Length: 140
Image 1 (cartoon, rainbow, N blue to C red):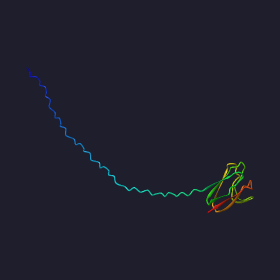
Image 2 (image 1 turned 135 degrees about the vertical axis):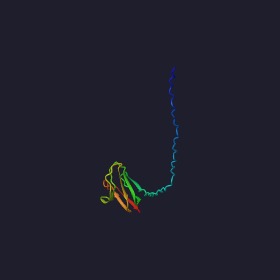
Image 3 (image 1 turned 120 degrees about the vertical axis):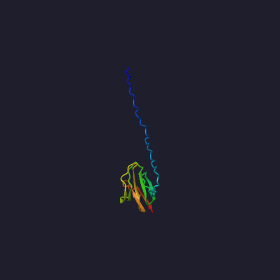
Image 4 (image 1 turned 90 degrees about the vertical axis):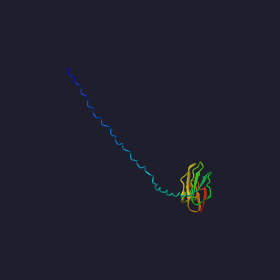
């Protein structure tokens, strides 16, 4: 018989060997070093010395009577009309205003203030009732 055909023998192919790939090594990142910085010192803000409070003197107009009293220079006097009748506090003597102060007509519980900045003796009166008189004495 005829010789049988021989099956072709596969030719082995070469499998390439894997060559190692270089793995990159991370380079160390330098850690920042804290550097001292100069912190400016706060400039102290001077605390203002509070000015002394203005002294206050209350004077009630009551029973058709104006008070006479003594205060220091710089005192603020506040007159309050406690009467049901209307009154004023007006510097000067009856029927003669001297123009230093002159309140409007004060109804019951209304107030008027004046600050005395000069020493002296200051007569005052009510223009509605001229018989009502008083004196504010202001000392240095």
